[in-house]
Length: 143
View 1 (cartoon, one colour):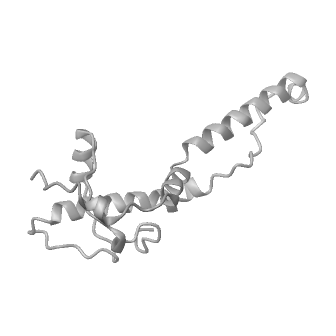
View 2 (cartoon, one colour; view 1 turned 30 degrees about the horizontal axis):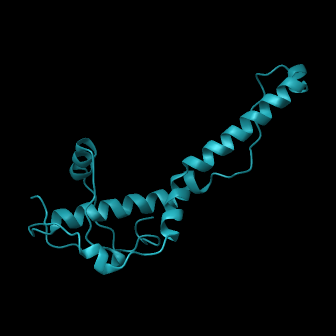
View 3 (tube, rainbow, N blue to C red; view 1 turned 90 degrees about the horizontal axis):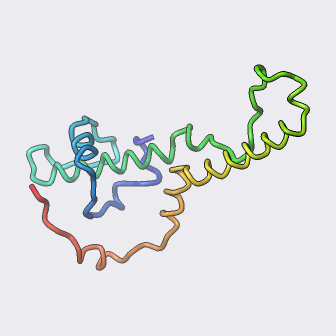
């Protein structure tokens, strides 16, 4: 999915400050990822390389979230429940039908609120902040 970079193409990249926990930062920096074709990376000896690599990894991570079949395959339509372990007489009871309805509603509510794909799509629909505003808060790298 990172070979195309449809949602987060590199040509739209800008320099921004991103907050990480120490653990997440250490993990993302230590993991190796070869730059996909759309990314033109500076030489690994360049001072700009660490920031460019970090940005590339973030963009690829967001791209994977948006393209991943696990997230895009989730549907708001309830699937058939596995009822093999439930006694047949209970399946037809009023209590079962009430519990099933509550469970489906809760699942769909939670699923909708927790989908990273939907959250990212909502953010992407927001109006873009002007370059002047973004560039006004740029700080030098800590390194």
